Image (tube, rainbow, N blue to C red; front, side, top):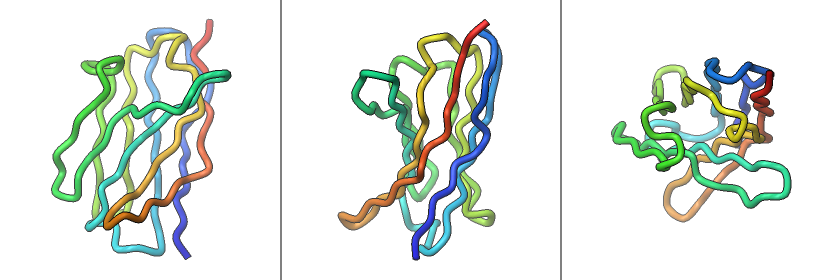
Length: 115
């Protein structure tokens, strides 16, 4: 059974930082590309960033220079380091594993940026 479990969300002030984690089990993690998505209330889910199985990463323009995605293939974990957070970053953040036409999602973790 494939499971993706996100953690690390919470309430943070503007300008603050959070690090999200997504622990994956039930698949060969090192062979999967991983992505982070987010969905704000009333908006569509959007891609935040992705990292390939060999470690190459890209980020959405809205978070470039502020967010960094990384992975640890020993711990079966993908991370999203979020710095200089803004109120518009408030959303539920999801991780996704995908390869060979298959994709698996986590349940999401809430990030709220507010003073």
